[in-house]
Amino acid sequence: MGFGNWTTVSYFVLLGFNDLEDVKMILFSLFLTAYLLTLLGNIGMAMIIWTSPQLHTAMYFFLFNLNLIDAIIATNATPKMLSNFLTETPLISPLGCAAQIYFAVSLGSAECFVLVLMGYDRYIAICHPLHYVAIMTKHRCLQLLAISYISGFLHSIIHTAATFSFPICRSDIHHFSCDIQALLKLFCKETLINEILLYTFSSAITATCLVATVISYICISDAILKTHTTSGRLKLFSTCASHLLSVALFFGSLLFMYMRPNSSYHENDLSASVFYTVAIPMLNPFIYSLRNKDVKIAVWRKMSIMARK
Image (cartoon, rainbow, N blue to C red; front, side, top):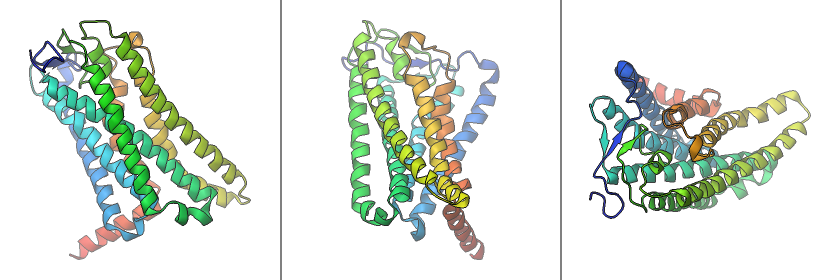
């Protein structure tokens, strides 16, 4: 019977790249390179923030957590995906599938909230600069971050429990990992309740995060427009540009994947999932470092210290 009362199958078959036999090794090389760059970029950035006292501010504290989340999101799916390229029949156990879904949803939700906190941090820094130190204290940052993680974990428990609450009769998942929408197609019974639950919670969290971020940037835009000099406006905008790009990539891929009816979900359309799982975690550390003077200075200092040794 496999995974307790949750499923009548003892394993799932991941068929996401089943039709791409001719280019399997090319894809393996590309995804392996992307994964290594993701780990190098995110863990490297996290270490730089951790070991650089000048980066011990609220903004970089949230960025540090974003780096860790991205590294774990990539690790949750990519190693299994890479191993699937090297096996004739890519399998995953129901327990492994449940774990993949749990971490994907919990960390994805946590990243959503962390991006909101980063927008809030920029709002306080630009709109209330004189009160920034008093508002964005270490204690408050820890509280906000704890709420983000707890909310993500609770959201994931609901999703994972709902996904495996009904018997599953089929084993072929047309995806490269255990995706909730792909898994709903394997249920023995009607999945309307699960779909309603999925879209209700996903819509509520995504909409809340998106609206909060938009409100922050409306206030930021108003403050920037009130700045009298062009150089001042450009300086203020440059402090938000990286976060804006990251937010656009994250919410864009999230809305494309999960805000459509299940009937319009194409099993073989994996591009958005690949972008969310592989590309975004790889791009984020570069987005936040390329135009960031503080990070560049910290990197050069570390390189100088290493060179002297």
